[in-house]
Length: 117
Length: 106
Image (cartoon, rainbow over all chains, first blue to last red; front, top):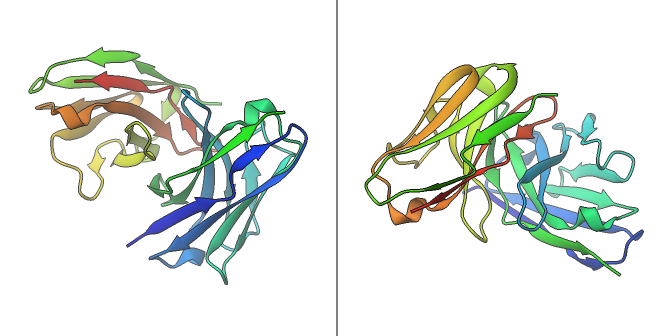
């Protein structure tokens, strides 16, 4: 069955970098656009970034544009989010999600990123 | 940018009752791109409804979606304690907007 497993979260100081991973299994990874969505503690869902099948197209929320980079390695069925210049307001659980062209049908369990000195 | 506004913020009901959750868009959207998700504490969101009215695989028929244009509704009939969760509407558009959520307490 479809599985998305995020990793790479942790505590990081403001201004530093962190890379998140999302390992996909149970489906043909390179047939799907993929997203990152985050959720600050006690808050709602915020879309972060999307990447096309082959990585050729990428789009970002204004709140992370220029600081975050989404990428994928289709040979390893893995999605990435490179986060730099991290701020306190980036503290959140980060979910990867599979795109089914009109909605997100599968979500990972999330990985927590805490930006704090 | 499309803004989704959900109401009420919190809904407290008893088992067996019917819940009606609203999602209003700031401008007309295609119903094909309107989805609902359920999120229980400590869990990832789970797809309930897509295309405004189609149930996702494995979702009980107690859950139904309706609406068009700017007004969409998620209805849960015969509430069960396990339905306690936060429910989000979602527009699959250029910014993949989410509503702020409705907390349902059973």
